[in-house]
Image (tube, rainbow over all chains, first blue to last red; front, side, top):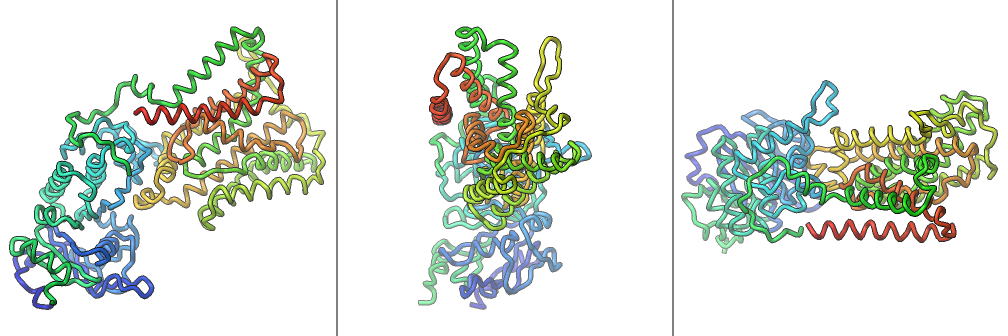
Length: 260
Length: 334
């Protein structure tokens, strides 16, 4: 497997990674969810993490997002060792996450979801919500990204799947995150809606972000990713530059067919 | 997650606010305010006594303490919980205040002690729900019973009477406004609905209550401290119930261990009639105010038209069911 890692990764490896994980292990009791995984993200790059169910993809991104603490291993950002103990800390480090479950409040309107957990306030007390600013910034960001929603005061409950996903991605934009994690951003979306989400991902890259995407959809992966990392049974079994690989090869890595 | 079958990219631009008309139409609050006005108009035209200042103020006074407790209850329900102990808390806070008064403590100190017990009870509910992870229904049902036991135990079943005048003033005074004499409890109720509304709708803390009630997991991922939110809402519910209980004791002039029995259901009903969804994350305290008003006006109306009082609770039950049915119909239509 070692030669797999070394193969043709040179073009991007000249840059310093914005995020680097070394020897990450994560055990849940006796279950080894991740075993000695190395993983790096380079500036303005879209990395796809692929693998079968239970391959450890979600565990890996949850470690980066501060939801799980690794059992062993180190994390570096811009070459400096860091500890990511909570989702809030991850955000402070510039890591923003769009969760698979979408993590929206269905009973609240668009601006409230847009600013969920970091509502702007006015006055010295840091108590009273600055509603005007919330609405303005929401409109600005949505317009910049070309996201169209029926109306800002609709409850998220009444938005379509694509609109929700756009909102979930759009709301991380104003925070200047350098690394954006997306867990299955196109799951349960139609063709047109998926296209929009993929465009958003490319837009994020244009704006200087690095994006980590988990996806089961090979077409989507090959549409947006620069590099593809394959996990199987908690082990990194391959890493390929998109231009130098084929969906067939990736699928073989996922199911372990090259071992046969 | 049900997704409506609309085109994702229907070419409507994102506009900051929708028309006021559609906003009003889609609002449960508008519906129940209309029902309230309809009741007032009908009663005003069919009875000679309903629209007299005297009767209106009696109605206001009669539902003020239920309404105040209901504002605290609303915060708990919006935050995704329920507080069944609010009726017992009302009685307990009243008894504690009355006991302090009978020990000769000052009015203000006694009231503060009563309120302090309210907050304390709410805080315990908060611990049971967020630390011990008990379902709110179970935790507060237990608390309901425990407190009622304390009410009987501490008084040996006897009501506490002979409360000082300085205390009775609170519930029995009317303040002169032009030609009207407005009961003090009604003014206190208005004060509480305004601060509750500001807290829930204009502050960060309020936004977080809606977020936790709407989707606790999502709120936590966004960095909201859901446990803290729960402590706050249950403590506030305890405090508000204590305010209601003390006002009630002051009005009645006696702290009985049997007081406020079953009130928790009226308090919850007021919130539910007012459009506060028991699923959490939705509604506001104005709804609870109107809900409490509708229930009291209905009781008053039944008396005024000479309906036998024994049937009141059936009428209230019918109102609860119809209010929720209207709300669900409205939501399905959108």
